Image 1: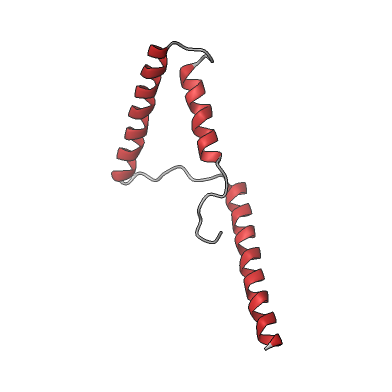
Image 2: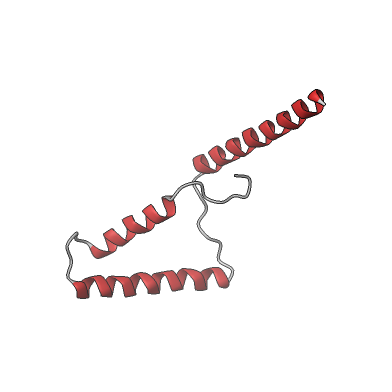
Length: 90
């Protein structure tokens, strides 16, 4: 929890939503699907190149950052309380 690793599959859901918008229809042909995969790959490679050149990745929304910080503090407080209780019992 404290390692700043995503707790959900939101990134996968975000990719799926973006890919669905890229495709533009729900029952495309195989060739349209392949062309959209290629386009998505080019977009991904462009984002990687931008980051390698020093461009900052888009940050998470403030509300999500605040929620993650609150959860992190709660976990840290619980760990501290647990240590205090073990010390008191010993």
